Length: 210
Image (cartoon, rainbow, N blue to C red):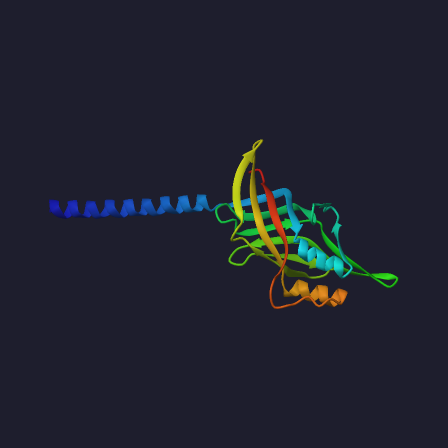
């Protein structure tokens, strides 16, 4: 009888310990992968000089859409897009980062202008990473592909605020964007592969906990 009670007690203790461990592991996993809400800062994209030369050679000039500023570098242009909001995983950074501003491509056409406007970029990070944009004030389309294999990612705290910084992100024009450029400006950029467009550095500020 004593042995049966002892056996039952041991089984009960093992089950209780196992349940406790499962709960603890679940709590740790949940804490390590908590979502981060974002409320500001910027993404800077420096255009690939060769691609910029091709655009300029076709009479296509990329201009900033307010409130995005643009500055010249030694060999190219750097556009900055303000981060408005977003939500990413604290561990993998999977999620979305939304922006204001954009890029307006213009080309002189007789007495008028050909234009292609890409605005309100949203970065999506996940199994596939890419950027969508509102095209000519109409539909939101996937227009840019992101390559994160060489990206550097870090989180840091400054003046009581937490920031996420992702640097060296390769940005490329996909077939949707290339097709829009060709259709709008009469160019013949090759399709079927991603065309290098720029290098992005993303600085996102984590919102304060309420």
